Amino acid sequence: MAAPTGALLAVSDLHVAMPANRPLVESLRPESDDDWLIVAGDVAERVDDIAWALDLLARRFSRVIWAPGNHELWTPREDPVTLRGQARYEHLVALCRSLGVLTPEDPYALWPGPDGPVAVAPLFLLYDYTFRAPGTATKEESLAAAHASGVVCTDEFMLHPDPYPTRDDWCRARVALTERRLAAHDPAVPLVLAGHWPLERHPTEVLWYPEFAQWCGTELTADWHTRFPVAAVVYGHLHIPRTTFQDGVRFEEVSIGYPREWRKRGHPRGLLRRILPYDASAGAGSA
Figure 1: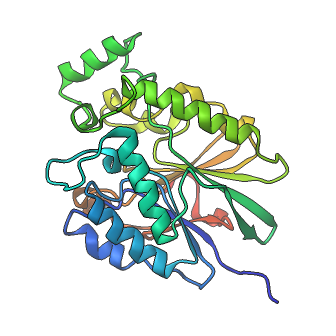
Figure 2: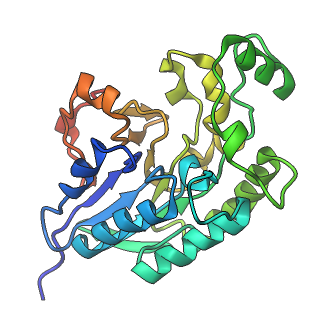
């Protein structure tokens, strides 16, 4: 039997509730029957929209692996599913499993690459306000600076951490759980770490509004790309699609983003990003 020849692809920030984005998602198709797809969060806000998109993709790709973004964790007034926090996340995990989509609660799947298997680890980590606004030293100061500038993430009003006291408490719990799993992983098998929020602060350095960085990750994961056997890191959230390198490790921001953003910049590298096998000709830092 011939070895699979498919690719490991990735996308994030589909935002299918926006009418202009829905046709883009409907256009996403594999290049071969063996292609896998990572969906790194922000599919939509309403559970029915999330289900529509993930079901569509699960029927097209050989395997789909999902990690939640902040938008999936919101509890919008217009959503019949009124669950909050951990209960909402668990509901989405159950939904994914009913569709055959893998989640951060499942064993890491082994993508059968041409150079040997690679484990795909979907991450749910959140943020803890340690990517603080310039000139601030505490969470409270950083949030105050954001409010003063008018740059405040909607999470502050719609992402509920129940039963955790705060979003940063939930973040620390998720980081601890995930860190234990990664530490137990076979170091001989390379990892693709795929989550919504950047693992390390360097991707946020290009934000137009640096105050927004505090909703973009945690310093607790800053060394994961070197501490563990990582082949590549996949993330979204920033809506700045590009390839960068940190400590020799490739970071891929794979978002589609909002129509006002992609209409301006287009999709010069396509809607789906090839993670493996890696095509170095794509160029680091390109959009």
